[in-house]
Amino acid sequence: MALKKRYAFVIDPARCIDCRACMVACRAEWNTPAGQTRIWVHSDGPRGQFPNLSQTFVPAQCHHCEDPWCVSACPTGATFKRDSDGLVLIDEEACIGCGLCVNACPYQARFRNLETGKADKCSACFHRVEAGEMPACVATCIGGARLFGDLNDPNSTVSQAIAGRAVYRPINDQVNTRPMTLYLSPPDASAVQVSPSPRQPVPAETFWHTVALPVVKAAIALAFGGQALAFIFQLFKGENEYEEA
Amino acid sequence: MSREKLTLEEREALRQQTLVKHYTANILTHWFNAAMWLLLLPTGLGILLGKVYPFVPEAWNNLMNQIFGGLAPLIYWHSIIGQVWFFVLIFNVFFGFRKYFIPFAATRMFMDKDDWKWLMIRPFQMFGLKKDKELPPQDAYNGGQKLYSYLVIFGTVVIGVTGLIMTYSESIPTSLQWIIQWAMPLHFLAAGLTFAGVIIHVYMGAIMPEERQAFFSMFNGKVNGLYAYLHHRKWYERKMAEKAAWEDHYNRQLAQSQPPADAEPAPQGGD
Image 1 (cartoon, rainbow over the protein chains, first blue to last red):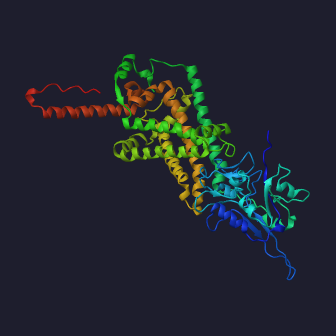
Image 2: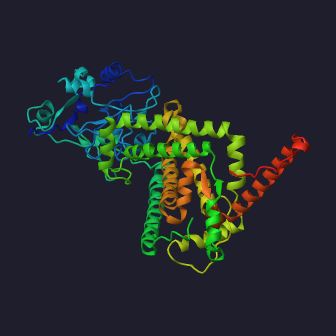
Image 3: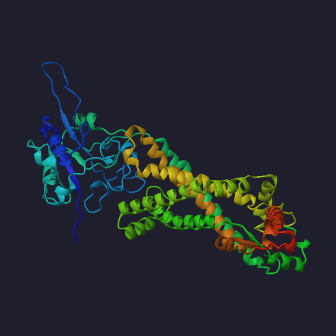
């Protein structure tokens, strides 16, 4: 049996100059509405005192987590983690744009597309990847800050890039979704900018779990149990053909 | 039910009588509703992902997905069937408002003291308790049926409206996204509670031997006099009075329209 693919982004912030060609390539590939983007280049601004200034740019996108909270929030499975390669994808035809996944993502990697009304995010250009190409942002990154590939393949660019290097996953004490983006920079630089923060579930989601599901379960159990008991009683009692109509 | 007060002859005489319990339009609406539920419930449960919102086993999600060829077509057909269901019901209520809905709501839905008393006794009797308690006389619908009618009407409205919200969610702006978010659990809650009622409705209407007449009345619209007398005494008496008044009126009209010379005994009414 062929080994399953385990796609990951490997990002080296030291190589990013904030040219944002990746963001242009992404928009060209996906025609994202103006004002919205699937990928970002974060920066917390210059550090230090003039003239000793430094600045780090941290490219980011959906991390295609191994434990994706967005998938655990979607009521229908319209957003799912693909079994064959681990990509977290959205079935747009099935999505009703409720936004529970948008709220669930601790990286704010998702948004509701203004034009389609559906959930939207980086799909790792799955159609390009399936055809053996790199995602648009990776293909266009001339600095080599963005890399993409199969971690299960020791010869892939990502496996080669992280070999012998310390890698940083954007997680913290509160959130560990096992993101599949590995950063090649010292944690302190990227930690500030891509650190996840969990958000409270929306009231409707709490209502799902604390009211709707338990109440319906109880009502159906009661109704079914009641009629089953009544039927058993009926079996003991028998039927009186002269008395009844 | 004062069964002991009737002799065998009286029972036989009552059995010969026929009363119209349901109009044809109501029977058609009932079975249309039932057929749509048979399609909508399994598909709806197939959409709700059991892995995330634990209600149905994942196998059910897979079965429905496989039958319809995926999640998107499953949702598509659920919403198509749902819209047919809701619009036909609205159509029927709208055009049948005067002749069907108002009479139904006016004579079959208001709860009175006897209905509440009935509710305190009848459910226990189904399990062999409170045997010595006398059931108060009931109208065309008993207390349980009346309560169920509220559940069905309320459930239908909530299911239909929330379903339409989800079907046309694309046109709801993101600032009003909470409407879509609330539509989902409310749709589930209304469908779940209504279905809990349906379980009891099906048992009492189709399985309980005492209510066998009620089951067949949903096909031919009729019940016999004994059933009406035993289970819906108030309705039986009202129907008998109505019938007598109608006959009286009819006979008088007939007598007026015919010349006195040809006067014959008025035909005896019978339906």
